[in-house]
Length: 123
Image 1: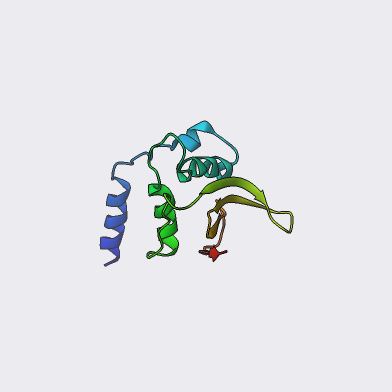
Image 2: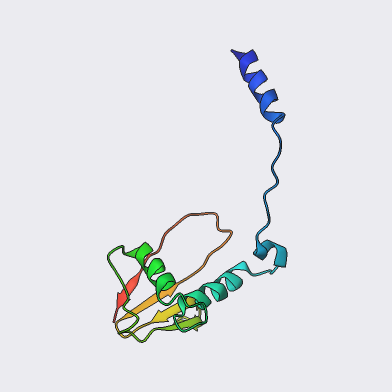
């Protein structure tokens, strides 16, 4: 049995190594991935930007928190803000304000724990 495992490990080592392609974020070498990702996300969340995706991205993000929730951009004023100061002096990466809702997004990279925080606050 030990010989079979040893042979398996040796065979595994002989498999060709595939190099993973770097992302454009890694290529850019930007030191604060959270800021860059938040800027990109803000661009696509804002229904008025030139991407012409309208509410596809914002509703996709909101759908992750609540599958039955849908923003009607035709009837909502939607404002997407970056680095909004909180009451305690911290900064929230992205704040989405509509007529009826406030949605906060905090990006975290390189953390050692996993947690999911999904909050939709009705005004």
